[in-house]
Length: 329
Image 1 (tube, rainbow, N blue to C red):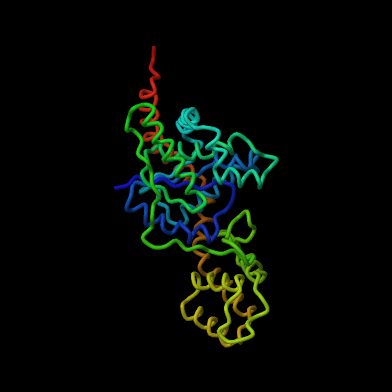
Image 2 (image 1 turned 135 degrees about the vertical axis):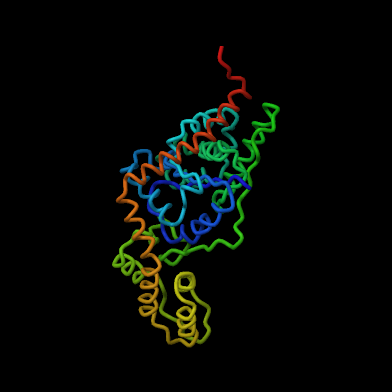
């Protein structure tokens, strides 16, 4: 059985891209592996050092995790900030991480371009904190997207470097977790790229029906096909990708035929797509609202998850301190 770790930032609600991209696979993954799922509230400070209602957002994300099927009785679900062992390991790993290699990471260079007025030390050492998150539990597998592959390789490098410097074989070198089925890339509503919070093109799991209808009806399309079987523009292809994931097969086929014979009305397609998204979203949204109202349950999940995660993390940090040479006088 593999030890698998996955985290999610706490700066906003989950959207349907998150769900189809990974969350539905996490539900399956937790039954087949020793899984740790954590809310990365420390990480969120690299881009939002003065967050608005951090506690409320953490609570929201935890509720959404649970509503999507993550089972705290099966997996270990916790808040990153509840484990003091993580920042200690982060500090120790920083001693063997070099400025040059951190400055060359793609994620750091991208963030510098995106937030030139907030190039903080935490942003630079983001891969080190990510490494601490992973190897604190000696995880062997990590589900990561393309944008995090380099950071996972950095984790492998830090684990290998620690082992080499201290002449041990303590930390495993984690590899990417590959799901049995290909992950679905959910496009945004703006006609380009994938769905995401920062892009402002997402449909959230907590969106009300009227909000979903408004968002979908405003989705970018084009003037329509002018000849049969015409190649689709990217915005229209995105709409059909959403419909293929969300709607019934017959519905998808109906609108494909309408497109290919040049009789499609995008307004009709968007109305249908909006209702299908609402129907898909409804049970998850209801469950989120129910869990959000149960502070006692959320507190219990967080407390018990922290206790389970701390047991694993404490053993690691004690071992690491002994390997390095920290001992009581």
